[in-house]
Length: 392
Ligand SMILES: [Zn+2]
Image 1: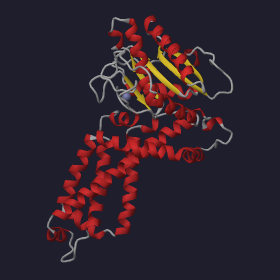
Image 2: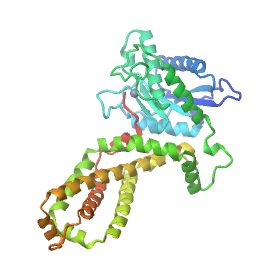
Image 3: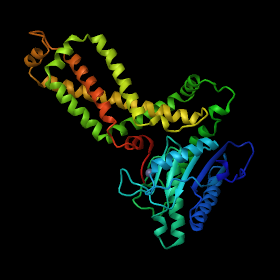
């Protein structure tokens, strides 16, 4: 594969921590597009060297002959394509450029898609190139790239900088990050510039020990990423998943057998079943949606392992929070239904109904059914929800 990529010499070797970015594009793009990407590389490189002199910056131009060709280009496919190249060449970040339009999943149109998880972004120049003023195109490209890179470097949206979300990238100000944002970027990159685990002498050679090492080194950061952001987002997007769960819960509530069985299951067993069901549901979605293919690599790489841990953790936390929601809803419904009827269904006679026990049971069976429904989602939508940081 190396024949695809002419080696670029590193710009400023020395003792500074290196940050390397790859710019990948189709080798068959027109000379105009290739020139624009090269201009962007030079301009961005100069500004990064000026703003962050504490790093040794390098941006590699990487024309490819194996660029995906199916139109409209699927950003998810391009992200995975770019992420594979990034891992193979040991780059820190990578942007994939194309002059072709991108397929929009959650928005009307899309000019770029960053993925924090894959440390990769996708940029299309198709709408930018419609502009007749060459200088406007340059400014719009620069702003869009800084916006995408800003997301990859941990920034959120900000009305007063290039991180302002825009419907259309027309090259209007502001084109740069704010002073505070530059400080945040510097701190973020300091972490990234540390040697990756596989570059150190302590890296384990067995898969399990390597995973445990990554968890030990990065556990807190990974947990924050999973808990604060991704799992909530995931649940918002899963329409069919939620519908399947709602239907199965309604049927459960209406069947006397479910109540009888609930009365027969002891509380300790139910807890054990709950844990097994949550794990099984997560695994079923993980493999059902082919998520183990994200960040694939022949060798053990810290970045690939991180992506997989975040993906699996997000699904698991998503399942747990989903279960909690179901539990609360079930508890509410049980509370509202007449006691006598439910106790009769459960075969409890005059004994009081253990409401928490039954709410747990309903929520657990709901999750079991919904994990089957989760695999009904459009093949790649769930993956996109997990991998995309945004569509812009
Ligand atoms: Zn954005």
